[in-house]
Amino acid sequence: MTTTLPTPAVDIRRADERFATKISWLDSKHSFSFGGHYDDANTHHGVLLVNNDDIVRPGTGFDTHPHRDMEIVTWVLRGSLVHQDSEGHNGVIYPGLAQRMSAGTGILHSEKNDSWRLSGDVHDEPVHFVQMWVVPDEPGITPGYEQLEIESELLAGGLVPVASGMPRHDGASAIRIKNRYAALHAARLEPGRSVELPEAPFLHLFVPRGTVTLEGAGTLGEGDAVRFTATGGQRVTAVEPAEILVWEMHAALAA
Image (tube, rainbow, N blue to C red; front, side):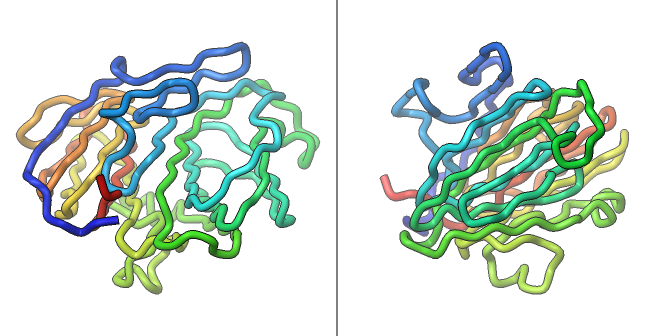
């Protein structure tokens, strides 16, 4: 991991440029190399390795599988997702609930669109969520899990810290991740509402829902992303009801 200052750049990535995995139960779009999709020029930005935009059919999902030395943040936009892991954690993730899993020395987990197994209310709604992976500060930490309801903060319409390891977010309404250089922010914006992006060596802006305009760059639609290097402070304004996810990163993976 390096904190060397990079050259300023604003790199717009359109939704249809993403890698895609589409099978009977899953429609997944990958912002970076993932699984069988590999491009050595597109492996990460800052400390963000994965930004997967997933839609999972009801009654299906990801069976139990392993992770190691990764901070995994899941953000649900529509529907609900059931999490279970080998450390005994389980819960239903839904819009407005932030969730983080620290894989650390090793963890097994599953993610299914079958919340009726817990509540008894069968539904036929797909679950739409974004899953993001960042590297931890150090390998071999103890596996962990945290979730936090932040719906009330989102209703205010500003940029809300969702998950952070940065010291300045101590005490804020954000789940903690094991990387002191990174923070995830989210905003729900009504038409005409704006937020200002933070300034950082590395930013990743993703639009999972709706349409916005980015100051100096124009319109961004659903699934579009922007990778900022050594810049920030631009305003993002909603054209229609929208949601944005912003990773603020003050370090990057060493080349």
